[in-house]
Structures are given as C-alpha cells and as structure tokens.
Image (cartoon, rainbow over all chains, first blue to last red):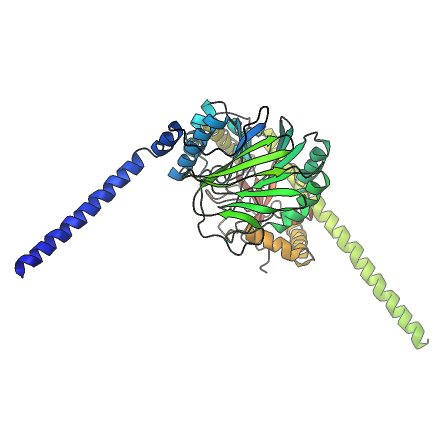
Length: 308
Length: 186
C-alpha cells in the first residue's frame, strides 16, 4: 500500500514535470519566431487567394486598430507580406488607432516601422486616417503615413478615388472640404475611410449616429461606393445601405472577442482572431478577401459598383 | 379703460419684454463670441512671436523634438496662463448655454449616443498650459456639437474629457483652457 502511494506520487510529479517542461518548450517555440509559421505557409505556396489579380486593377490591403506593438500585430503584418508577394498589392489604407498609447520615437518603431518593414521595403505605401488613440499632429506630419500634413486628405489610384477623413473631429470645415472634393472627384469608384463606423453591430462601441447624419447625405449625393471604418475591434461586413458597401475592420492589432450582439446590420462578422483585408478594384467590380492572423479566409466576395 | 384694452396693453408689454430680452441675449452672445475670438487671436499672436512651426518628417525622433520645442515655446509665450484666460465667465456662460441647448434639443439624444459610443473618458485632472494627459485618448467631438460652437483656427480643437470642455492645441499637445462641468450628465 505504501509502495503504491509512492508510485502514485512519483507518477504525479513526473506528469506535472512533463506538463511544465512541455508548456515552457511550447512558449519558447512560440516566442522564438512568430513569423516562422507564416513564412513556411508562404514558401509552401499554400496561400488561399480569392481576388482575381486582373491586369491594371487597383489592389490594396486594409488594416484597422493595428498599432499595439503586440505579437498579434506582427503576425498579421507577416501574413500581409506573404500575401503581398503573391498578389502584389502596393498600398495599405489604415483605419485609425495606428499607434496606441504613448507616441515616443520608440513607439513609432515598435508599433509601425518594425512590423511593416518588409512591406515598406517592398515599396508599399501606407495611407493613414486618424483614430481616437492617435496623436493628430504627430501622425499627420509623419511622412510614412502619407497624410500630406493634413488631418483629412484625398488621393487617387487608377480609377479609384480615396478620401481619408478624420472622424474624431468632423467640424463644418471638414464637411465643406468633403462636399467639394467628392463633388469634384472624377474617380469611377469613390472610397471613404475613417475610424468611427456609421453602422456597427459590435457591443463595445456601436455606431456613430451623429457622424452618420452629417456625412451620409454627402456620400449619397456624390455616389460614394464603399466605406471602411475601424474602432470596433472585430471584422464586420455590413448590409449595403443606400447603395454603399460598408466594412468595419478594427482587429488588425486589437481584438475584442465575443463582441457581437444580435445581427442587425452585419452580413458577416468575425471576432475570434485578428485580421486584415485585401481589396481589388477592376472595372465595375470590387473584390475583397478578409484573412485572419491564422491564415484562414474568413470572408470574400465580389461586389458590383451600384452607382453609375 | 375696458377690460379688453387692458388685456391688449398687457400682451403688448409682455411681447415687448420678450423681444427686448431676445435682442439683449443675442447681443450678449455676440459679445461673448467676439471676446472669445479676440482671446484666441491673442493666443495665436503670442505663439507666432515664438516662431512655432512643425514640418513633416520621416523621423520619429525629429517629430518628438519638434513637439517638445513647440510645447516649450508655447508655454513660454504665456507663462502666467491660468484657467479662465480664454473661457472667461462671460464666454463660459455662452459655451455652457450652447452645449446645453444642443444636448437638450431635438438632436440631443443622438449627440449623447455619439459621445457614449466613442470612448468616454473619466474626469481627470487638467491644467492650463500643461500637456494633455499622456496615453489618454482624445474623445471625438460630435459633429452636431461642433456646428453649434464658434469655429476655431486649424491649430486648435474642442475636446471633451468627462464633463469638461477642453480647448486643445494640437501642435504642442497643450491644454489651452477648459470649462469644468460644461457637458451636463444625461
């Protein structure tokens, strides 16, 4: 009886030791190089690509609420680089909260320059919009964000016109700028991106109805086709409203799991991992693919341009 | 004098008093706005004398240096600054009235919802001519509220921290002035 107790004790200790060593080993592997898994997947040619890669199309990636400096941000960035090599997207739009917390020089490096270095080295340009965690003056002046020294700005890529707005501070001056620039735009596709979502099923923040009453009439009047926002730390594809497609992508660094309530506005939602989007505009179609940090494609599709 | 005539005279008097108070209130508003704008212009002039400007750069180190220099020069431009320099009692009263009428008006519930859905901040200790609290996000300011407040030059913004309306200098990251309790609880 005494012997069997000793045996049980020994076996238990052995099991505990094995578990502890196994856990430590797993942590070491995981911390050693978070990019290894991604690199292996990329080199093995296992990427699931669901955009058509047509000639002369406009291809870009989308990230939102990315600037944590955490491991998850780095892993998403590595996944983006693997997809860049395969799809040759040449710019990224940022939906705000580009740098969380303090904005010291080290933070710019850790939360932006370092994770996206492979993309920037390959010539990918980043176009930032401002979130509530961003420093508006530092970031508008930070050249790698390509904001031209302004809180809100417009740029053109092929047949698509992009409008980066500052939804933190939608004053009459910005509304008037938006009115004029949408009116004058010759883009076949008009795409707006900014931080606070107009429609949102997430429970943490919800939609910004006041912002919506101010900008939506302009979007409708001038035929905006698609709107990308962040803020809620999940992915959502919203039911098209008034001929406009809406996406919420606020989980490229931050993540709010179990954030969804009843599906009122969303067609598709994803709140269990970080993600980014790939978008391709070719002729009258917008193709999109949303990819989780794990590499799984969580949403994809083809959307026709509704406005003439 | 007939009763009917008395009533007419009384109604006329009340109407006159009402119109007079409206005109006086409008004049009061105009004078508060002018006083506010004059003080903002003085603030900008003082800053201009210090040659405060920032330029786009690739370097986060340069960004930090520029911001530090801008903050130091802006502080030096008004070393005696204190709360109420810009939001004087008269100006504060006007702002409180504007905010209250926005929040109690037909768009009030939507504006409050917008504040709730942004990232509401607690009331924190603020100091004029000192840095906006480090690592604290900037609460977005509802567009409808911005429409009802006097316009600001590019360098300055209204921000809400808890129940306080803050005048924020973007380039220096300094609190220019603030009105505590300007945003009443629902």
